[in-house]
Image (cartoon, rainbow, N blue to C red; front, top):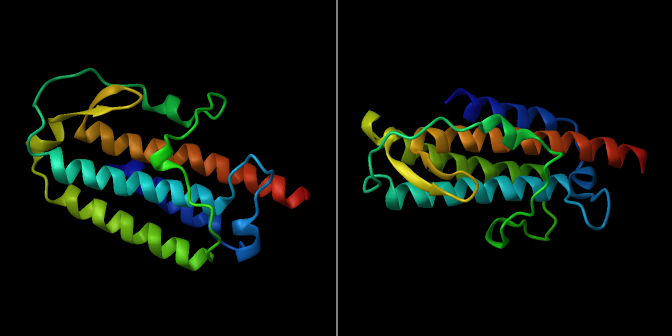
Length: 162
């Protein structure tokens, strides 16, 4: 589960020193602000928390192959977020966004902590990989966040030039 935790620590590092103005600034009209990226990450955690709390204990136990999670980090393969995971269009402070994201992660971590070792081998549907074990789902969340850390770095470079 290390990528899951490492990615979040890296996210917090990327936010250091950002003003609320920079945090909410879009590099272009059709691009996300850093705040919007964080709102998307919050929605991922909330969606995963709901999925795991409702379906983890009833999901089938089965062996499936390892999936190439690293490809999720590749930003050259752009995909639009599903509508339920698109960020809100509001402006909030860095501190407020961090609190929201911390709350979503605490709730997700609580559900993960309630699982037993066998549960991590249970299989749930996934929109990109078709199906993942719960362990793979948790790794996916970390790799997905790494993708967006790269996006945050790109946004910071773009807004510095404005």
